[in-house]
Length: 181
Image 1: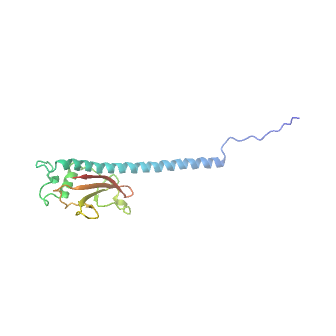
Image 2: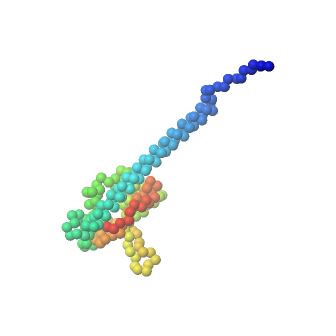
Image 3: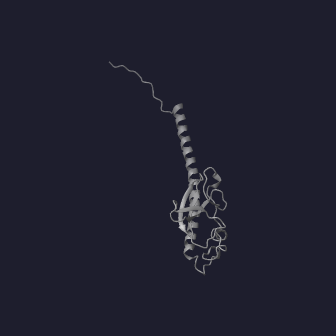
C-alpha cells in the first residue's frame, strides 16, 4: 500500500517575527557600541588626567632632592629660605608658566584646578587635581597626621609630605601618589 501524500512545503524566508528579532539584535549591538565608545572616551580623559597628576608628582619629586641647594635654578620653588618669601603660590605660578603651561583638564579644556577634596555631587570637579599636605600631630595623638589643602599662601621653605589625587568622571577621588617635596 503505497499512498502518496504531499507534505506542505516549508518556507525558508524569514517571517515577520524573525525580522523583529533581527532588528532587535541590530539595535542592541548598536547600543553596546555607542555606550562602549562613550566609556572609552571617558577612560582616555581619565588617563590624561592621571598623566597630568603623575607629571606634577614627577617634577615635584625630582625638585625635592635639589631645591635646598643654594644654586637651585627655580627660585620660586626653592626651599630653606624665609618662610614668608617662599609661598606655594609662587612655585605653582612658575610651574604653570613654564613646565606645565600646556597642561589642561581633558574634561573641560581649561587648566586644572587644585582642590582639597572631590565631591560626587559636583560634576564640574571632574578632571581637577587634589593636592593635600600632611601635617604631623603631636606625639601621643590618636591621629598621626592631618591632611589639608596646600594653598597658595602656604610656605614651602621646609620639606612637605604631599598627597596627589584626581577627580574622576563621577567626581570621585582617585589617589595618584604620596611623596615628599
